[in-house]
Length: 147
Image (cartoon, rainbow, N blue to C red; front, side, top):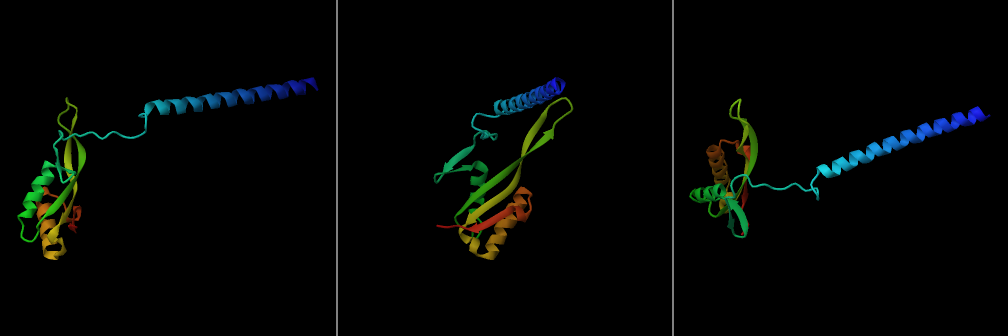
């Protein structure tokens, strides 16, 4: 009976040793994950376009958005409008010896305009923006401006 008891103790020790190793590995992985993240888990927003945002009516608008607003206001029937442009960054290899540079591509444009209730004006806005930026009209959303 003493050999059976010794065997049982050996199996328990092996089990507990394996359990301790697994727990230590899990703890190590969790610790490594915590230290590899930022402190609060949020991602930092980095302004890559050189800080060209300007305050407009308490909101922020880029120079490109302001320029488009001015141009759209010159189209018959558009009237007052607000523009928001979303950008997508793409990596572009310059040469074999240099690192990749990032360039920005317009992902979509949203416009709120006084005259957008008129289907002809809405279509004119969509086609003008799509042709200027070389994007599809499906990437341009136009809505009636709320006063």
